[in-house]
Length: 46
Image 1 (cartoon, rainbow, N blue to C red):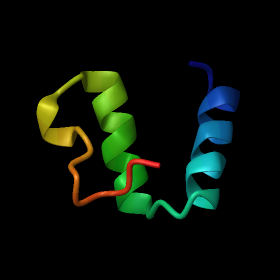
Image 2 (image 1 turned 30 degrees about the horizontal axis):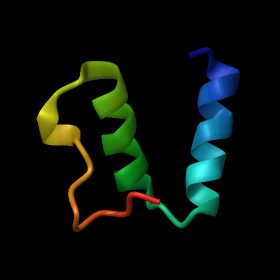
Image 3 (image 1 turned 45 degrees about the vertical axis):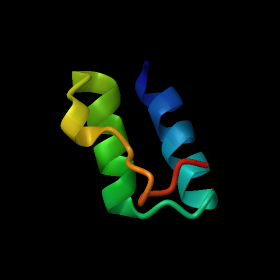
């Protein structure tokens, strides 16, 4: 992903109501693949 794609994704997630912390965890999961960053049922997954 380039920076423009990342910026669009962040703006879309914010528009969906995701918090900054939720977005950070999601981006860390995408880049690292570490399960500890995977969204849980308690977090938004829209």
